Image 1 (spheres, helix red, strand yellow):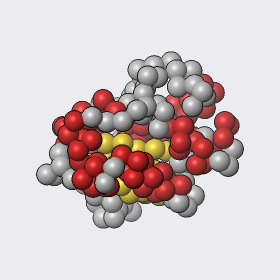
Image 2: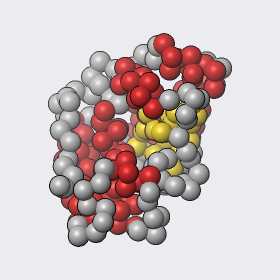
Image 3: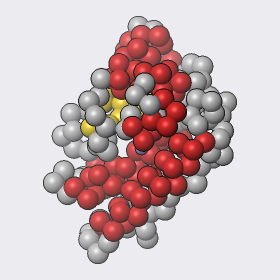
Image 4: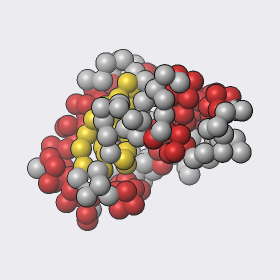
Length: 202
Ligand code: MN3
């Protein structure tokens, strides 16, 4: 069974003014669709066909560039759409808030660490908030479409929040101003979804 481009839970213009409709339309309808199609092509006829994307990434051979780039692209964008919402922003509550305070000292310190990881990722990539077994959280960044689930990527744990810092994610609206895009991203984070991912994977 082939992977399918997931439908968004909101309209392309729902995240405006923080993320503009044109960027969302191209990003979801072209970029994510492209990764999905190419992932299906890369696994067709191999023993990866029929496996879950989590299983594929967790057991990935990093030399398999077709699956690494497109499987990562498929998974990363699916997570990205799910951790944003029109009525997003604010702060997490409950167990996740506590874990963030324990790891970083405060929500503001976490926000600085996350934005810094994203802003200083050279070239294309992603910044992540990950949970480790036992509930500890940390922040890291990966290049290209790599993902913390991939073995030996140097960024472990289960990703519960990710931000895309490829230029295609922000260039139409923010041009070279990646820090402005990152600040805006915090206005659309769907903390209830991130908290649910935390609870499921701690
Ligand atoms: Mn992207």
